[in-house]
Figure 1 (spheres, one colour):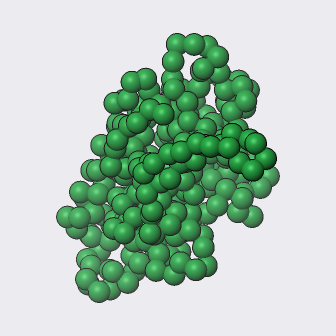
Figure 2: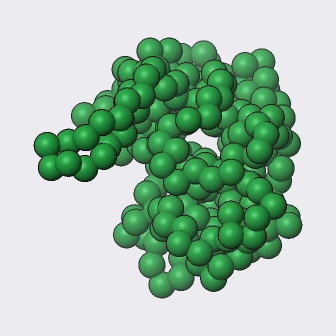
Length: 253
């Protein structure tokens, strides 16, 4: 087992192996406990009622993107997660996001079989369409998955939402809102947070406009990383930089 360390990866506490009562070998990994469950639970579970405000969501995006940046640019060999989605992002006591479930992860090597997407399972909707036709596996695949996660968190829509039919997708839903109709696609819970915050702070029209610009910039990141042409997708390090700038803008309104 290769060990890597990053603040935004779920830590492995211990591992073990043995033989079960049927004589089959097994291996187990024990991960650190994440008290606030998964990002998916916070978005879509009826048991979670407090929701996440905009700053919390942007901070979570930075956490997840930073984890990918570490895997792609600071690990040798490069590690591809291959199954990034909301249910694989876990939140600790302070709502810091940690990426987990590396069951499909691969090392990016020079061996053509290593880089082949043949047999890649992943999660439908989160994996790049070109993986389905055997395109070479690259770090851009994780960037695509991140973009879908981002758009899901901002809009509050699942990939299986009833509005996504007859060729309509989460990408198209978000892209059509740019640049002037962003509030129309924002998660209702997030809009409520923003409206309540604006009333409490007696926000000026200028500040409300700045928040809308931050929302638009966030959606643009998601859209730009899920367009049809992979060469146009942003590098994950640039994604981190852009998100940090958005967070700075929000914190100074």
